[in-house]
Structures are given as structure tokens and as C-alpha cells.
Amino acid sequence: MASGSEDTPRSPSVRTAARTRGRPRNAGADTAILSATRALLAERGWPDLTIAEVAARAGVAKTTLYRRWPGKADLVVDAMAELFSHLEILDRGSMLQDALATVGQYVDLLQLPETQAALLALSAEADRDPSLRAKVIGKVIDPQRELVYVAWERACARGEVEGETDIDLIFDMICGTLVHRILIKGQPVDEEYLTRFVSVVLAGLAQLRLSGGI
Image 1 (cartoon, rainbow, N blue to C red):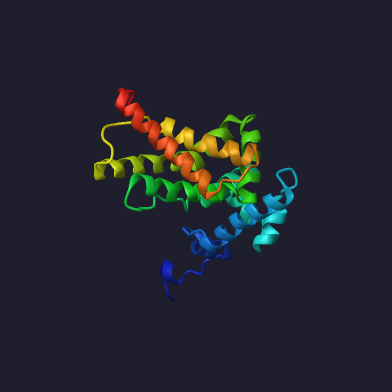
Image 2: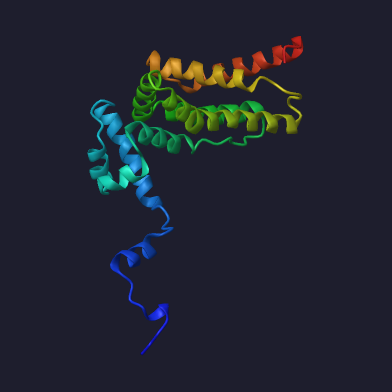
């Protein structure tokens, strides 16, 4: 008679646990879910966005979403975080050209209907939910702010600027102006406006350095 644990039949539940333990998340499914969330948000708006519709659009079961996101707000935060994660500091050889290229990417994202629907909805919801506000800051806003640090350090390495600066102020100037123009006023940002805006921001930084404000 054979002996030892190797020959002892395992129950179906044990076999299932062995197969699923440590199973990695399906990156393809995550991408499909987040993309479906953004598309449906643009089509339906926040009040009519449902987990069931997102699951159907993404081709996954509702349970797949509920295992990963406890609610609609968390799902939308991650959908926006994934979208903005594609922003990067582009190297165009100078601080001005880098800023034009990088801020241009940000403008392109802000002008997408799904971005506008998500940011306006999250802003309203976060006003009533401090925990949601913290998630938006941590997952969406802070990574964008980090890009300003990277850009400043690159300009310092080139010798275009030196010392420290108020990164939060620069970030607020860029995001505040563009969000106000695009989402609040509903006006586009074309190449001419973008060039004037970036030039004013950089000129302001230069003036602050000359006056000892930074």
C-alpha cells in the first residue's frame, strides 16, 4: 500500500486553492475595465455609470470588478490614474520646449470628454468624501506634481536655472489655469494660447529668481 502525502488525493477545494493562490491579476482585463469605465463615464455621466455596464463593456464578470474595486468612485479614480500615468516629461533640449511638449500632453488629456466627465464628477464627490479626496490626490494629482520636480531638476542639470523653487506653486499655476479654461470655461487651448501661457509661467519664474522670491 502506498503511503505519504504525495499519494493522498486532495479535495476539489484544496486543488482550487492551490491553483488560485498567488494568481497574478490579469493586466489585459484591468486595461479593458479601466478603458470601459472612461468610455461609459463620457457617454452616461456619473449618475448613470454602473458596475454592471462597465463589466459588460469590458467583457468580464461583475464579480471581477467587485474583487478589485469596492465601489464606483475607486474604479473611476484608478481609471483616471491609468490615463494620466501616460504623461511624461519630454526632452526637447530646453526648458521652454520641454514645457511646451509636456504641458501639451496634459492639455490633450484634459480635452478628452472622458477626462472632463471624470474630473468634474470626482471633484464633486470628493467634496463630500475626504477619503476619496485623499485617493484622488495620491493616485492622480501627486504623480503629476512629481513631473514638475523632474522638469525642474532637468533644467537645473542643464544650467538653465539653479537652486530650489516652489514646485507646488508652479504645479497649481499650470493645472489651475488649464482646468479652469478647459473644464470650467469650456474654451480650447490651441498652440498659440499654449505658447503664451507657458512663456508667461517661465517669465514669472525668472522674475521671482531675480527679485529673490525663490
